[in-house]
Amino acid sequence: MKKPAAPLTYRDAGVDIDAGDRLVENIKPFAKKTLRKGVLAGIGGFGALFEIARSRYREPVLVAGTDGVGTKLKLAFELNRHASVGVDLVAMSVNDILTLGAEPLFFLDYYACGRLDVATATEVVRGIAAGCREAGCALIGGETAEMPGMYTSGEYDLAGFAVGVVEKRRIIDGSGIAEGDVVLGLASSGAHSNGYSLIRKIVAVRGVDLSADFHGRALSEVMLEPTRIYVKSVLKLVRGVAVKGLAHITGGGIVENVPRVLPARLAARIERAAWRLPPLFQWLKEEGDIDDAELYRVFNCGIGMAVIVAPADAARALKTLKAAGETAWRIGRIVRRSRNEPQVEIV
Image 1 (cartoon, one colour):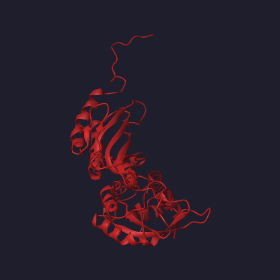
Image 2 (cartoon, rainbow, N blue to C red):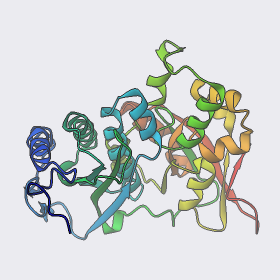
Image 3 (spheres, rainbow, N blue to C red):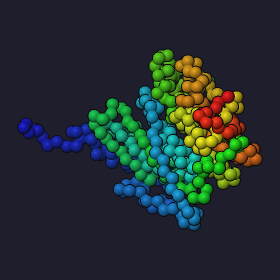
């Protein structure tokens, strides 16, 4: 066995511990701005500590969610824009746990790369912290993994983990949804973080110029628009209106996500004329020659969150949501479902 001319180091193997240390120092100020009551220990230790306020909850139930950003990252790499995907990462998890009525408490991230670029990673975490502030949760920990040979140069992967809390008697599980209830739709900010494999396919096949003007903005900016975070507005809603069901419209679109909160005996009849299909989805439909069934099964098509309430509460719910800054519409109703019929019908 040939002996190396000089002692080998971790840096020789492709892992720069000093770079990791610099990243930790860079992100501490961002994380500090997200702190909220309950945080006992955050970034720097082996684990983070959070105390649930006993004065606020009689029977607190923790709600956890995890997600990533998917192939939207590929666009971020190509365009060298990384802060927006940090917001996406937070949004995907906090919006998920919100559907149970949970208030997000804290968030952790996982950043994996082949070689750590401190500037890029700092930009990503800056976005994560911005998303946490918007959601009202604390960024109290995470992990940076530098793994030479695992990722293409200049690329990374992200995962996020959110934990929230809800009073047990106030859990929103869809069990009270009844025939005749109303479905409200909250506007999305764009494609959010789903369907990007198809978006990228359309861009590649059509030879699309991402710098081209699209309704007054660069097409690239429209495609990288961060996922809307609905936490503050929806929490205001559930405190004043009896919300029966919430569905985060992610991969699978309205067609596959609304059924996740419906009793098996019921279906949602959604009226596509209730809101205008945003220009991005019109463009995707035309450029990709996508039929309607596929479009509504892949993309959110302008609806990022569905809210189900009793008919008597619909007007007040819409007023509350709009006052909280949401664009919202009455988009459908709950009907009785016959055996073997789909749980969502878009008419």
